[in-house]
Length: 146
Image (cartoon, rainbow, N blue to C red; front, side):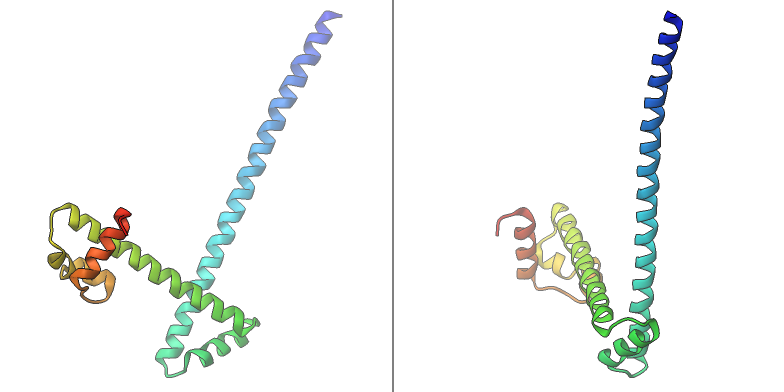
């Protein structure tokens, strides 16, 4: 009789472990599904941004390009405009982040603000040369010395 109780406890413990594994697998599946959805949205945003850029390069205004894409995709112009603005903002903030990182790297190597302002790597991320006072402000902001 005691053997059945022991066996029942073992089976209950095994069931509890399996339930934990099922929960973990469901969490992993949800995480992968969310990542796939995010990647799909990123591809759509890249496609929208690229199409807007091509239409503007072709001579359309930004508003007309947005209206054209909205009509093709069956969404509102406001939604497409929001996506375009979001992509531009993120691209701008990403460039700023890389520029600031490069400035801090050069400052750590001992370059002067004037040298940093004219450095080709900073020019590439900034889209042109900076003034040495701008470099000083960026370094102060990054060091928290506002």
